[in-house]
Each structure stands twice: as C-alpha cells, then as structure tokens.
Length: 180
Image 1 (tube, rainbow, N blue to C red):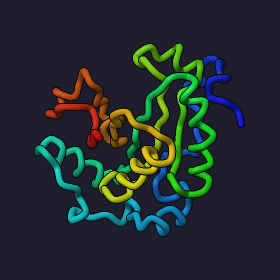
Image 2: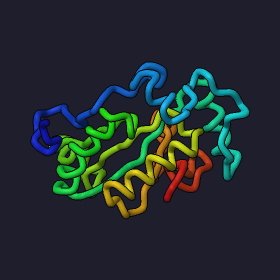
Image 3: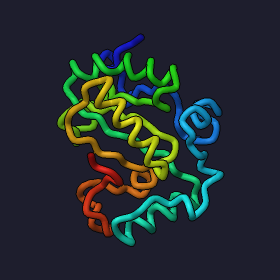
Image 4: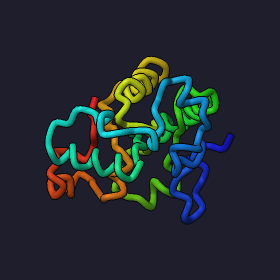
C-alpha cells in the first residue's frame, strides 16, 4: 500500500480508498444494511436531523432535495500520524467498518497551503443518521486514539463553499455540522 505522503506528483492532492460521489452505489448495499443506514434516495423530510438554526435547517433541506447526504469527519495530524492511520483506515473501509476514507497527499499538503496539518477525511453516506455518524466518530476515538476535536462537514457545505471565512455568509457559526 502506497503512503499518501509518497505522492508528490503535481495535481495529485488526495488519495482515496474509493470514490464517494454516489452514495447509492459506493460501498454496495452491505454498509447500509450492516449499519442500518438509509440511502439518500429513500430519505424524506421526516428524516431531517435536529437543527440549531434555520440556516442549518435550510442546508439540510437542500441536501435532502439534492440527495446529497454524504459527509465526513475531518481528522488532522502530522505526516507521521497520517502515515500510521492511513493503512488502518483503508482496512476499516475494506471491512465495512467505515464507509470510505481519503488522505491528503504530500503534493496536496504543499499545494493547499490553507492546512496546518495533513487531513484524513472519513466518510459516512448519510449525515442525517446521527447513530452512524456517532458510531464512526467513536470508532476513530476508541480504535485509533483520535483525541483532538473533530469536525464533521456535510458535502452540501463543501459544494456551496462553506469554509471558516464564509460560514457567516450562510448564517452559520462554523463550517461544520457537528463538532465533537
């Protein structure tokens, strides 16, 4: 298995365990059935999670309408820590414990100067499902000793350009749906 830190070719920002662009097909039915997660195309307004503000609720409604419920825990760390965690998280994805994982490469770290640390993104297919989102967070903490504050960012936030500097423009206090 190639370390993401060894990837220094121009244009290779991220290394993925699998493509997560389509929540209905990526990872097959097994993850959804094993963890009792509802696929995006089967969600209704009744499945919307509790929201702190109307701005958060509006983003959730848009995610529901667009069937865009993928989200991710953002795990940051040193090069050494990413190199240690990457093969373990890929194995977790292959085993179906987590849905998918993506690692910032050596080139990405140099090219994307907005990050102080390397980033691993650990995906879940349905951020409305707080049980699954929490299960994955607990797995990161219990099995991989991830102890720092974790931020969970739905892909709808990413697609709309919600970052720390722009969160207020969207009526948000932070660029993450869950912080734990």
